[in-house]
Length: 423
Image (cartoon, rainbow, N blue to C red; front, side, top):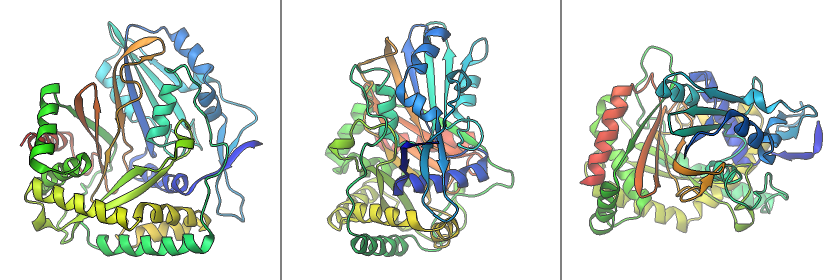
């Protein structure tokens, strides 16, 4: 092992490692983030192999392994002396159904123990090439994935791993912040939060996407500005909550509040171009079932909750909680997360992603047609709703456990969210 290139997992990395084990146990696929890049033209297998093989971040990930000493709860990312051959992490799909190949790529596992923490699928159409990057979430967050994509696009070199640790508060201050964050989350989640039904069969990851037209996206923004009068995150989450409330057949008979965790990027300017590690904290939203009957009302409630949490510095305090918990043994870590809500981290997960760095750029020397990001399927809760925009078209992507929501139900939920966005 090469310890000179190693680093301790951050609190957010360790958090993702826990959910990686949960996801793999319940659906057979770990916590894997994915980006699908569609480019104009056909890129040969040889060109893809040569370019990927020379990428510094890919080479680093191919050598990466997780290590923990028996007497310590701290996990480290270390470099193996013998890297895997890049050819082992690439799969080229020719002569098969494109949709079938795409769905196969979206369910590929990326494991530190078996296989590789990174994989690349290349799917060919008649006049375009689609490249799907799948990476274990422990290695990077959404911004890191965007930086990885940019390393194949922009002329400047991305920074692979953090060169120095984040400046941390004194331990007593971190513990005090952790206590405040814990009490806050416990107060608004509780034992009986709303959750999705569980069907008797075992679940597998599934995905559905709905994309608005440019005109519909403009209409949504007009409603946001002139009708709902909140920020985009509050409106989009409000539209999703209202839609789920309408589709009450998806919910278990639990008398509790809706509870949703939303990740937020906490990168400083110094870490803007870093690929590896997670720089995330969370904000949390709740709603009583009777208060979700109007998109406008629930959106404005979410906006007020967001402002209140910002004033209390909750995102920073939750970062302290994650940091402190790096030092806690795995069984206690698991119990802390699972016990308060009986293993359910929320009703569903939600993300509003910024625009891609590849917009109006080339990728591997070819014009970019589209970029889509697919969130992991962590079950429970079994549903992750992602909003993002590319070239003026709003995308809504569901990542879900098909033992909790089937394909038809996912399509119906997307259509209801669409109606909410268009009033």
